[in-house]
Each structure stands twice: as C-alpha cells, then as structure tokens.
Length: 59
Image 1 (cartoon, rainbow, N blue to C red):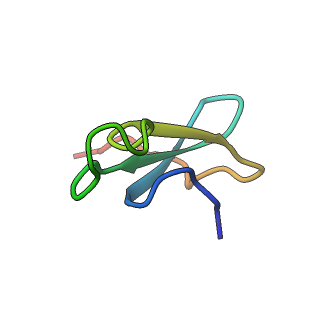
Image 2: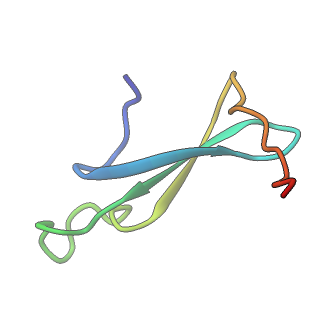
Image 3: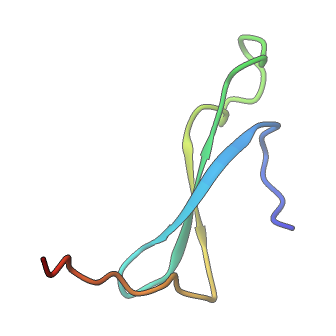
C-alpha cells in the first residue's frame, strides 16, 4: 500500500529513466474547493523497482 495525501488516486505508470519513479494520477471529483490541494495532479513517487522494458513495434 502506498500512502498518498489524496482521496482519489486513479492510475499509475512507471517512468523516470535512470531513477525509477511511479507516476500516480489523481482526481478532484467529489473534492470540495480548497480541500486536498494535491488532488487533480500527478504524484511522482520514487520507486525501488522498474517497470517492464518497452520494445519498439517491429511491424
């Protein structure tokens, strides 16, 4: 479990190149104005693991 300062995380993807990062998108839906200022943004969380390698389409 990854603690985040938002109520609505929506999706995640690995990125970061040399330094692995987990990018987590979040939603402001249902959050009142002035609450949770980080909601609706992308959180970049340092990671100790990398995502699967990406291979170019060959065909």
